[in-house]
Length: 315
Image (cartoon, rainbow, N blue to C red; front, side, top):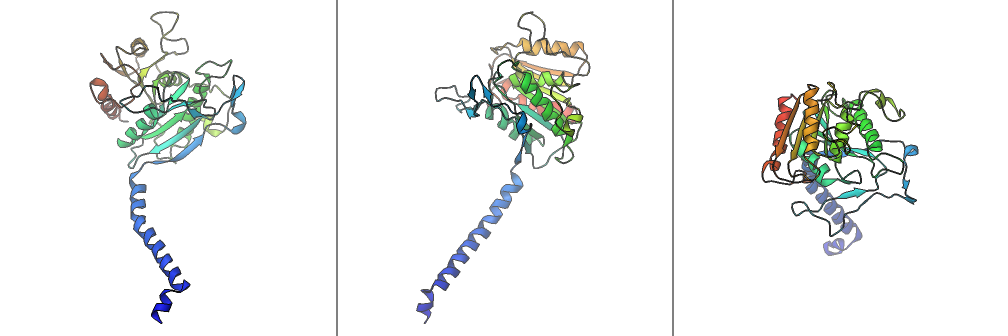
């Protein structure tokens, strides 16, 4: 009788249900632990309504993709995601386990042609989370479509992102007066540009988020590019107009940077002249485009200097 029961469909079904239940309960603590320790990166928000998107240029439809080739240079023996043909600008919110109320919008570089999304994006967001800072990764539109300045659409994206973050500050656990921006290379130019171009939106209003200030409360520039005037030596680019209202700024660059250390020097001098609080760190070697991957020399320690600068400024 017992042997016949063990062979029935009812017994097999009971065994299967028990197996599934055991698997669920066994994995539940692991899943809960992962949710408790991992940053919340679930918030990916489109910056613009679909009817404002332009997804064609140069006679063909643009499709966002990684343009990295197997022969492209690696950084610290790791590949780099080089995202190109970006037509849908977004922000992605990385929330730390124990947020301290400060937020930084991170702008990857890439010559306004591509975005180094991991090297100068997600890796920095993860690091900011480790010190309690909420990080917002800005995926801005590149490259520029015909008839547009290379920074025209990215500036719109940066202004829109700052307004959205400040508008949602309470909901996201952010202090509305503790919202900064950080940029690398071309992203450094974009960060400096929006730090001096915030009085008026450069696009038609979308919603109530465009009614709040898009001025960053602080700015971090890492090996910035395009800040100097290409035609007039010793001057900043004409679109960069520093005033006493420019946010406090942290700057880092190396003297052997192929995009020229003068970008940092001239911007710092303009800040000094306008009496804007600024801190600059220059290193003799290191080059360009290393993110936070380098662990040697001065460029291997600058993230700790940023953390100290934020703390010193009560951020």
